[in-house]
Image (cartoon, rainbow, N blue to C red):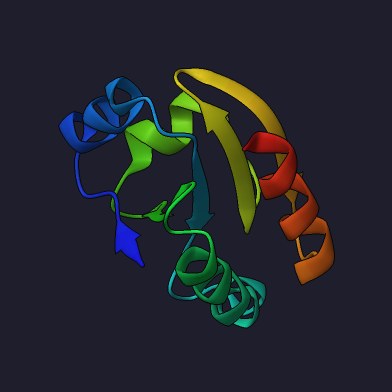
Length: 104
């Protein structure tokens, strides 16, 4: 699973036209680490239809601020520059999968 490392990378993603999911997390966040294997599994499974990327809030503070991330983990489901759905906190694979299917 790729990580967003710059604003340019995010802007390229928006222009790319493919729907995408941003997983805002931190290395020190226990629930984020618990959710990570599920998100990675879905990233592999849906790689043809949607890009799923992780965003470290400690390294990409401006992006976290842009999305008004106040708590983590937090997932945003986007098409272009438009947020179609979001999930805050721990969630199940079933719920994430449902949001991905609605996005594509």
